[in-house]
Length: 235
Image (cartoon, rainbow, N blue to C red; front, side, top):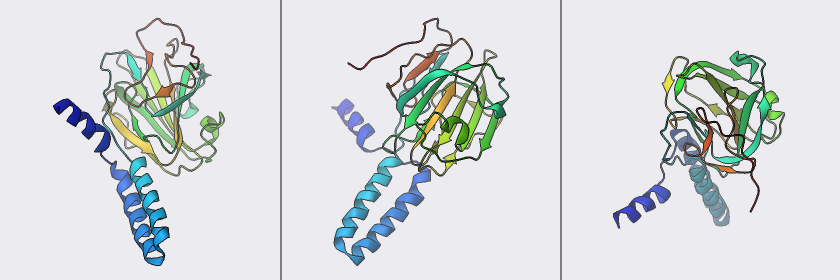
């Protein structure tokens, strides 16, 4: 009985990210004004307000704690698994690295999480366009926040928050020199976006294109593993 109550609380009484309260308040005030003007418009505003609350939900996650596991930094679906150069501003060289791109729709949780423990070596914001984040060229052309992590084993890894078509603000309060742990919350992107993860050379992604990823829970790769790149199919 206590277990059921705990699970019910986890899924229904979800905390709201602090970034969301100004928007929720604005939506609620607009709803009252619309209701005063014409009651049916008030119902439209109420639905929009509920969606805003839903968008900024900030649920707890159960993060695998074994060393070496790289966890998804974002909720969404795996849009791309390929080899690509990390953003030039991170100073990680021109060699191609395994890359996993997770696309977040406006219905996904947008709170991002640290993919693996380490130290923030470089943090770089680059202004840009607001193309659809599902496009390949969004990695190069869109506004982004790139972070390079120095790992405990001497290697490095990067993750990049990319603004999308309706995203207009990337939130990333990390600072260079900060030590972070796998699964910790570190920021969000408002209203539809994507996060790219650049793995160390030779590390195989363990997810397939189209797979659903859960921030803080889904394993993207194993830094100590020897498994080859996974394939997947719809069944």
